[in-house]
Image 1 (cartoon, rainbow, N blue to C red):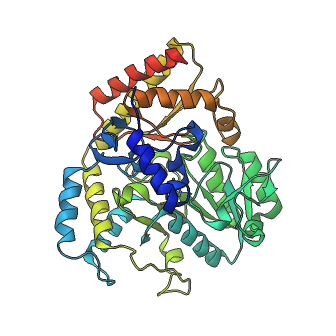
Image 2 (image 1 turned 90 degrees about the horizontal axis):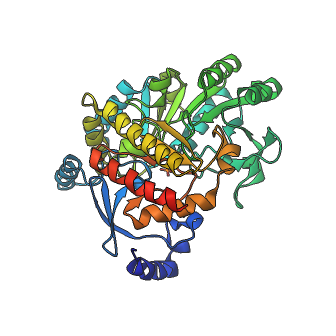
Length: 428
Ligand SMILES: *Cc1c(COP(=O)(O)O)cnc(C)c1O
């Protein structure tokens, strides 16, 4: 059995100065009834904590590290870039290079603006969509997460369609009043909503593969249906690909499913582990942004040379032939291995996978939406998490998160993970 004595000491200290000891709540390990682990370093597929324990890592900084930890090319590029200065508050050629790669890869993006986080990307995309349409209502889906933007911290109350109810105190009723929510993967519910007030809908924002209630793929034809509906009503369709962009495929979920939104939000992988977000879309929409247009949006450190270098170097690696095929094959091997291990131990699970995203839901039923995900056995998940942790496998400390595989995960790590899971499933 491992222990986390040093992590516990560090946590006690951190709690004195940082609310809850963490700078982002998902790190608190709240849903697995354990104190957070303080990590110290990472290399390839492995992370090492403050007590010296090593783990095969399927969290990967919550998605960005698609090349694994401390990839030599990324580290070298950052080192040489840092020596040249970390920012000037002027444009740099590096920004154009990253923007060009993104615009070439992502079908919906003609122009793109770089920001510092996924939250910023979503917030700015909404402002722009509202300005472009002259409308105010935003539609989002239960269980989809778009960062901590006020108007998107909304979940449904009872019933399929409700007026927005804030999920968090501090979100004003005015911010919530312009948000509508629908169940994910339910085209009929969205049609009903549009039949009522479609003419006032500025934007529909959606994760084309939901990743923030666990990995929940879109049902056959669902994204196409959302595209048709938004087109018919003149609403801006925003794909939030902060998680899926350059993760599930080169160019994101929109290339995988062949559905092109009007705007796209990016983050995570495009920063290669440093803070980068982006939002982009049709030139006609993007040209409304200041300084060309009147929609204000800005950032002191947006597109800073270090972050952009990490992103550019990461995308350069990903553009090599065969990278995504190999990632998908590895992840499939893992996902099937986990499913078979659960079945042979008699533990009911539902396994999902898209590209290198995967989730093992502790559910007897398929999971298509938040209701399905919420019905999972989270106690059993917590025991699964702990069992894996003691065997040197680190998955996200919540049933409602996607797992990630990196290019640094080899056959050996996958087999070791499945072997550990076989033992844990038998104990459940
Ligand atoms: C992570 C995530 C965000 C928020 O990004 P931050 O960089 O944490 O602000 C937004 N949308 C989706 C789909 C995400 O997965």
